[in-house]
Length: 337
Image (cartoon, rainbow, N blue to C red; front, side, top):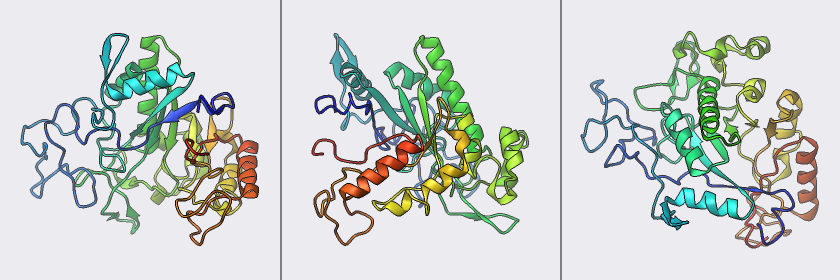
């Protein structure tokens, strides 16, 4: 990116997504127990807390996140040994770039690694110490879904222990932890990108009575329905207050329907309040310049979900995202594009 001019063009941040850590924190010698839906198994069939598969009695969410040394080995920088994530941050900075990392507001990530819920301060301090400039903060509820007394189905997170804090409250906690960590370190704030898709609903009858989303003026004024849970849906109502980037839709395929009026653009136009200095509506990664393994850029194949973009489609996508002040996040293989 530095060599081919992308950094000079403004693409100045590289981010590592889900899967960078091992599947347990450093307080455990083995991975935490998971249910059949890949969520953390917090309680056994008798209602007793599950303390980890090694039977050590430690809280399975205790300790620090540990980078996967197989993928990101430790390196020596200026005579000091640093972990692989810290090294990548240093290397990105040496190229005039910023470095981003993935975390979640839940017990487990979407790929079953430890999430940051309950350990916001620990993770925020570690990220800042490692030199992280940007955090993609995901929301990964796992099944099996439960049916509430109102007849609606809801996504839990962790077998036997459901979420009692809204995504609004959980994001706010992490945002404040990051701000405190950067202030203590005397460095600029970390950019927080919230990827809580509008389809993720909450569990209103389990939500804490003092959850800040219940009394937030924007949420109250929007008239969020009870089965949508305060602070969950729609994301566009409240996200700009607790994050810099606000994911306002689901994952897009490589076709323009997702970015035009049938998808993200319509939502972005509905919630313009998120677009202001320091906050932007995130319309998902771009497919401009993307190359499919079954074809080459600019040649359409028969798989609508994975076809390369034509020149006209790429220009249209870039134009729409630019007009909406959305972040330009490339989904292309930058080694070959």
